[in-house]
Each structure stands twice: as structure tokens, then as C-alpha cells.
Length: 180
Image (cartoon, rainbow, N blue to C red):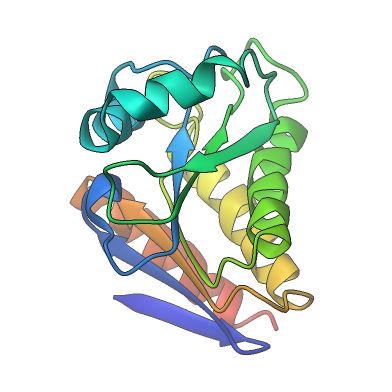
């Protein structure tokens, strides 16, 4: 596991299942606009959380690309789920600003709710088609910049499903270590 600590905030990258991060206060859902169960991350989180999550999400939908909302975690081992709608690459523009907004808003919601630890998937890199390396640079760039100002959050975990994705995250995090 690669990690970096900035202002007492640890940013780490690991291989795993986003719905199985029992030691995290919150997990982030790479949501669809209607906040409904689907495939990928949204499907995994909704299946693990149970039908109560879908019910709670209905009144919060729809959301737009770049937005985030928070719910309880229901049957997940966490307290909260933060749902982010990332951009569909090549459709939702400006994609880089919308993707960065997802991460910023999730971190803001974490701070506002006293969350000390949060786990993120690689938002928009699956069926939404965002190139992994570009998305990783945005995600880790936002996280490292935000860590300078965070007061509640102490641990940010990037949970990757594929070893090849983890390798990209580790490489970018290692590069960022040398820049600050």
C-alpha cells in the first residue's frame, strides 16, 4: 500500500472492494444521476447496503455531474455513503473541472459531517470512459491540495478494483510525493 501524509492526513492507495472498507467512516459511490443501483461501484454499494439506501436516495435525486450528496450507509459497515456523479468523458464538459468538483465536494461533505476516514473509488473511469491516468492525476491532485486544509478528515483511501489501476494510482502518488 502506497501512502503519503500531509498535514496529519494520510492518503493511501490499495486494491480491494469499495463496499468492504469496514474501517472507514464513509465510502464514496460513483453514482448515476438518479442515485439508483446499477453496475460497477454503484451496484456493489447498493447490493451491500440493501434496499434502504435506494429508498433514502430517491428524494435526493437527480444530481448533476460534479455534484455530491451524503446518506447513511444502511447495511454497509460504514456510517455514511457520499454519492458523486462524475462526468461522462467526451460528453459532460468541462470534464476535468466536473471530476475535480466530485472529489472536492465529497471532501467538503466529509469535513461538514465530522468524518475522519473516507474511501474513494476511481470515479468516472469505468463505463463513463474517463482515461485512468488523467482521472488519477485529478483525484490525487485534489486530495493532496485539500489535505493542507482538512481538520476533521485524517485518512483518505483510494480503493482500486484492478491491479493495473492500483499501479497507476501508486505511480501518480509517488510522483506527487516529490513535488511538495
